[in-house]
Length: 310
Image (cartoon, rainbow, N blue to C red; front, side, top):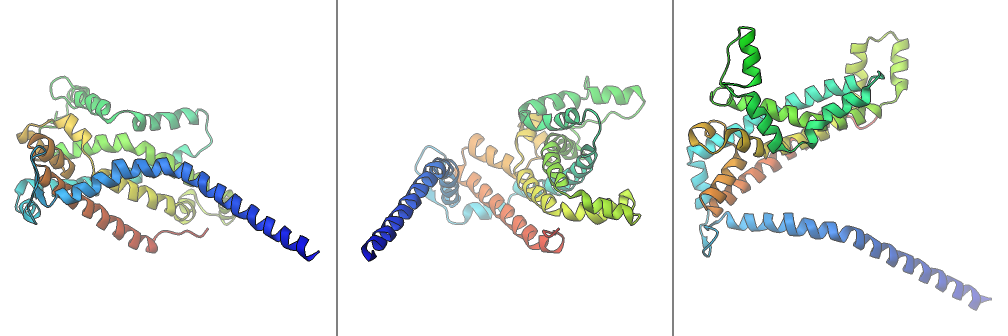
């Protein structure tokens, strides 16, 4: 009997080991291609860019070591400092406006009214539209001579601004398009958070005589703070890397683009127009440090306003 029990235990251990081996094999098969893609197209280029930031390289000849020359040149460049300021302004305006507007729209779309699926689809359509197409359409809307916006303003007797050619409002004009294009994604995420809030909270507060406004600020807002935090972090990372809208709507004319240029635009210009790959990589490295710093600050600050317990 002892031998039978021992053989049974041995067989059981062997079966468990085989199942564990099979699970690990399936895990590798599923995760492997994703990891390979991330390593090949994201991690390797990022590491290569970090190394190139400390070299002089035109993309054709062999790179030569530059030390910190590229970094020093960046902070002595008025153009780069303008790009840095524009990027911070862009993010500082676009992210709060996007999150606030998305929250308001999501609350409205969370109501049970007829045709709500259509409204949700319409708000999400700009998200799945190519940024180049969005930029081209808004380029026409902003046109000073035959654009729809100035045409309507002219009819009602209001001033007709040069939306993309006036340095004082060009950046805000692009921010408005960016918010219009990206707010739908934030709406979907916040709407999912809203639908996860139990109705019992509202029923109890209604019995206590709470108004709709009190319910929103005392119940809804605190309970969706994890979603708002996620939306804020992802929106910030995306807005810091804005490029396509500026390239499509402004072009590459220095007199027009300089007042609105961002860091990623500078990376494109230095690397692919001026063949200064080392200098472009240095700008990308500075942008990476900015994203890392802002993300760390947000994760540190979220302890004071994000509530994970219902």
